Structure formats: C-alpha cells, structure tokens
Image (cartoon, rainbow, N blue to C red; front, side, top):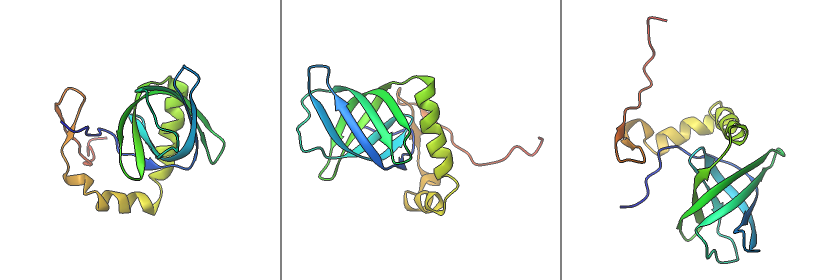
Length: 138
C-alpha cells in the first residue's frame, strides 16, 4: 500500500541537514512540512539509511530538530515521515502552518488538491472525519 499522508504539508524554505549517526551528513533544501513529515529537494548524496536525525533551519531562522524515517523518492523530491519530535519543535511547525493558513496560497492549495473531498486515513487505516462546519451553539 502506498504511503498516504494524514497531514497537509505547507511550503517551506530553508536548509535541511540529515545525519545518520554513522558520520554521514547530507545538506539539502526544504520544500514542505507538516507535523507528520516533510519533503526536501533530492540531495546529491544517496541516502542509504532509513532513519535520520534532522535539523531544519527555516528562512526566518527557526531551528526545527526531529528524527525522521525515509518514505519515498521521486524525480524532484524526497519525503520523510516524522518519527520523533518534542513539543517545542512541534510548536514551531504548528506556527508555520498557522501562518501559511492566512495566505491566499492556502486557499489555492485547498482547491488544487480538492482537500474538501478527500478521505483522510490515520496510521491504523481508519478513516478520519474532517469537517469545516462551525458549532452554532458557542
């Protein structure tokens, strides 16, 4: 079964350093991010391991540190799933997403990916109900 994301990734710019714990250190550029994972431009060095210590320095200077698992490689990008992240670093990602959600680009992404009509599935394969309805009894 192909990997299916639970989280929508938002565009991000910055430097990514991938370390495998055995001396390999690979630098590349960030493309997108979510709490569940991130994408990078394909690095020039082949990635032989599946688990990496990751440092992402955003264009605004924020440092995000996490552990990630290699998921896929396409012709233009490589994708990773977040395997360990602390609350401080998760909050940085949450803030980046909240900032992106205030842009017109976010609305374009909803339309482009038809997000309102997709079925979302959790890690166990269960469908997640997503709604944008407001509770009128607030």
